[in-house]
Figure 1 (cartoon, helix red, strand yellow):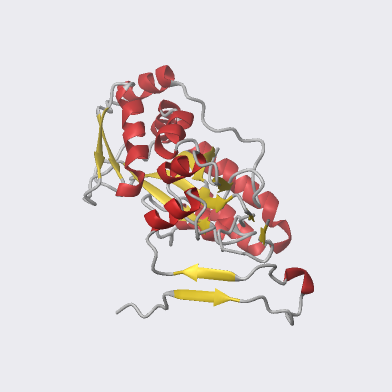
Figure 2: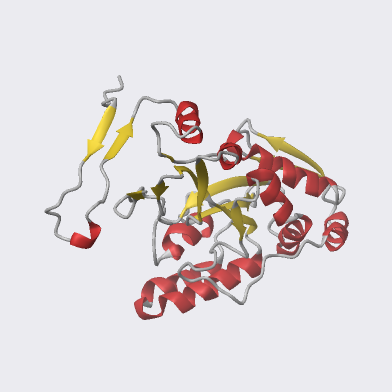
Length: 299
């Protein structure tokens, strides 16, 4: 049984220890209005001022309003395709084939078709401005002819992309790219085994330790998303990161370069977090996506 209150009202605490962080507005959370109704209220300038967690389609609807706009946050989130190296007879243990898949996919097109352009293309697992970002890396170039030659020689004819419903458009766009290089690609939302890549979105909760929260989770021997044999090169760099507290960032950049060169995943993009915000409100989101409202003001 849902025991939430219909509304929650938060008043500024003027006795808070940090006077620079005392909220400037009274905040009312509506726990019963539907998301669709809330978006309509923002669009028409009604009783709702902020709606969180918009889909790209919802954001496009809000962007057409004269009374509200879309606030985009470059959140610390990654979306990649994990190669299934563990399935019987998998050819994805071959680095050149993983690299070829990365060259076969037009990441900018996938971002546009899958997320309406709301996101940032990634060279590996970390985006610019984040701890450990390696500025010497570039996303894999879209080189379909090069990719086709490698994949054809390896006899890759079929490909299964596993995804949940939330990333179906992303998977469809990837499948279209692979079809263009001669591969019959199928999108599977059933959760069955036998996939070649699985789309995984994951959030980096750590401000300064992406190895533990992101890299290890995808590629480490105890990672929850790992679908590959234990990789000694990866584990060796990971041990250095854990045992070198004063050299974390440079070693993280080294790990990013290794993950990129090995093409452990189909590197895609960091999806932006989207908010519908009334024109009468000044709101700046945090990259953590925690809803911080201390700086929010009403015009």
